[in-house]
Image 1 (spheres, helix red, strand yellow):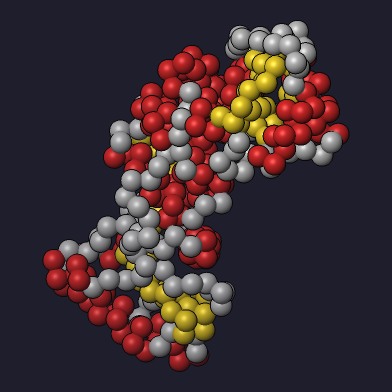
Image 2 (spheres, helix red, strand yellow):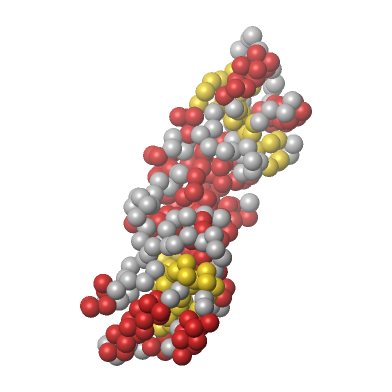
Length: 336
């Protein structure tokens, strides 16, 4: 299926109008055999034992119906069980003649909005090996951690990524032995492989920009006061790594350092304002984000922290040095 959001919308429209279950999914590989394998339709949707063969047209015509009627006859010649195969035309326009003929040939018609793009059944624009730490893939992965077991369709809907991307991410995870698939449902199988993959792809320390010492005797108090000051100054910031991970999990962490995301343009202001001339106090390790981390922040005990998803990504990026607290995040993630 094409990776555009419009085609994800098309899938949702078809599911609603055909009254499909939450387990319905687009089937990537051909479901037709032998002579039928060269005859393609735009979408093949499986819902339990039922298959829906869908042609998508801007304006349906006689040729569209004739194509599906021929396909139906070929199935019949192969003694296929047609009680579980449904033939569908999704189109922006249907004329009265088309509606009449479709009714006579038992072809279902679904009217779709005019802004829907045409799908394909292949995922040619999506790489075979999706990076687990990429923004879209990580949204799918952390949702899967939260739900424990769910369908690709639900991952796509909840996280608002295209069905194609959700499918490609899960397929890549299965190939790496990170997830398993049973029927239409997937679940995380090996969290160690997942965490190792993140550490390899996106080492957190690659985002490191600098370190200063500030005049506070306690990391927790320092993070609270910095949150208050920076928020009042209208500066984009958020604490991450061990600081946010400790707050989310209650895991004991070191008390001499805090970990802070700042925009690059705010570095000079922060250093000039808070740096102590004497090297005594709390260390602030500063990181420049490689993606949007400020829109989904939370406040924990007066400290502004990145989301659980971003915290887990950053913690995993620490590798084995942060593995204990990272595993604690994984264990508690469904509750965060």
